[in-house]
Image (cartoon, rainbow, N blue to C red):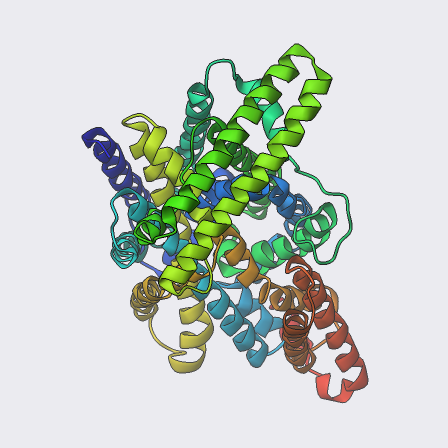
Length: 570
């Protein structure tokens, strides 16, 4: 990186948290620290919700996902608008009316203490894992740019997150997210503009779009119903809806955002804003990844995008032969891509057909050479697996963007990591303090005591995130990994809240055992079937609801509770 890149990156990273701390000053009570005193406007909540989900994983791994697999991953988000509308109509008014600090506090008021505790533990496990994965993403950035050890990077970013989260609480997190989303969107637009400008002479924007479509990178919608296919229209609409309902309706990192709203109407607007903006944003990010692929049709890409892997195999006797194989295959592909472009412009259908066939053959040769390089790496390092998807976009940014722009894009990725991690740390602290510590250890302590405990546990979860981040290197595409992990836990929470909201005869015992049954069904799907992970969200949630209703019907004498003492609290 040039000195200008360093100036842009450091200035951005310092300025954004500083703005958040300034806007979040004055968090002197637990309500201010965890709920911002319920003063947030809809646009701040909406951008914060988006920023918490749009971590560095989104910009590193999603672009790489499009490079490798095309744009079909966008179908994963098709169910999100449906979920946002449902939650705006149900969860938002219920949570606001109940006056809770956390979503799981509501479960005790509706069911019992053990159901609340189980839901809290499920959340802490899932979100505790996810925050580590989000923190690992910037480690990839700095390892590509400077060759820094990933432990050092995660420690630095984790320390910055802990600093402004423990100091300013949810107000600092929210206002920091607002600024971060502005920088993130600006950085993506800059990256796309530079991509188009760097395409070779004779290949314009619409030519690049045509090429991306011809070579299969714009395959955004797959109508085939295939239970084993991770991304198609049906898994996105149905499985994606269930996953989004679980994430935005049951995950404290999201619920906490709209609990900070000035009113129910403001909180509803924040979700509806995401319903309209999220899918177009993800489409745009994937489109950037597809354009990176087109760029590398004309400019030689590295055989492996992870530079450390190339260094590892460069001394191997078979390396030269594999590199020669890759270079020859890429040259064939580059010529075929130029022929496709010229034939399309000239309207020569016969030449276009022949060039497309040659392209596909050359692409297979490129893939075969890459596979040989991957196998060589595995043999050299004794590794069981290898995936360099997360390095694709960074390879383009660091090598081809001009001075200043590199610093901006790197700042975008690092601030995205901070925004998602800080929100998750704050929510982890909220659940740890309100659902476990205050409920079971110190039920009668002062407000100041809980404020100090919240800050301490924020720091503790930050330390955990730094440690767990090391698992990220073993989990392939991070954008898939974080949603894969969520699909093991969100269905159970979604089923529990569905019982709480809509099945009034179900009580605590039935809900508790139903949650365990739902988790068992997910584990069965994982170990004994090949069903794609998005369907875990549908199966697990439905099992929880059915099991809860059956248990409440079969054992009604165990489920009788004094409703009059609870109805005023729900």
